[in-house]
Structures are given as C-alpha cells and as structure tokens.
Image 1: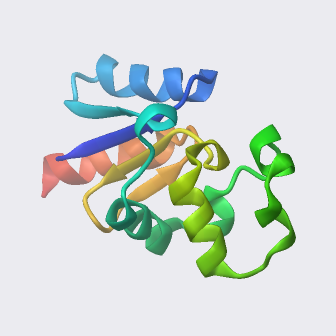
Image 2 (image 1 turned 90 degrees about the horizontal axis):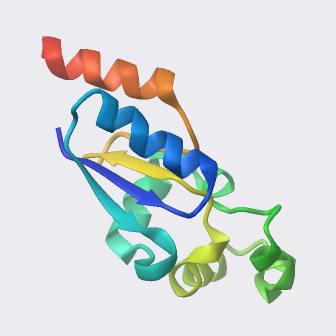
Image 3 (image 1 turned 180 degrees about the vertical axis):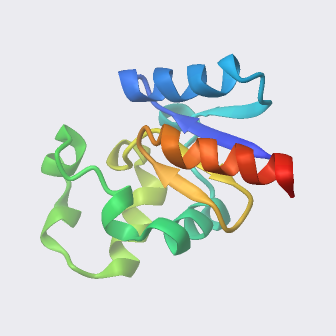
Length: 118
C-alpha cells in the first residue's frame, strides 16, 4: 500500500494522519499548502473524486479568486495547481485508482481490509 496524504493545517487533516498512524500504516505526508500537488497527482485524484469534491468553495481563497466565476474545468485545474489553498484537505490517495477528499475513515478501513485479503 502506498498511501499519500496531502494535509493542510485543519482538524480533518490531523485526524486523517492519526487514523493511519494508529493502524501503523506507512503514509507519505505532503504539506498541501507548502508544496501543493503536481499535475499528474491532481489529475489522478480528479479522475477518482471529481472536480466538485476537490474545490474548497467555502474557503476564503476561493471567495477571493477570480476562478469562482468560471465553470471551465481547464481554468479551475490551472487555478488548483497554482494555489493549493483552493483544495479541500486532506486528500488521501492509494495508487491511481483510490482517492478521497476529507476525513473518510470508513473508506480507508475498506482499503486496508482489501489490502490484507488481496
């Protein structure tokens, strides 16, 4: 299992990190606000969860962004790459086909169970 967690400073990010630590699962933590996400990583997560799940439309960064007036996915993707504050956190990815946004312990438990049996 290759868990990657793009974590912000919020409580949900802390809970996600703690979830995997308590289960002694190796997870690569990436500071979302400092490093953002690479294009391929973002596209991989986007393919699984969709654009609406990734964008933090309630955040101050989105309210201040000109992209809030656009419905074009290509402009939104460019904005997400440029300003990681527009992303919801945490973003948890396990390979190219499994990803979540936010605190999703039930989904992660399923991943862990599948990895133990398969």
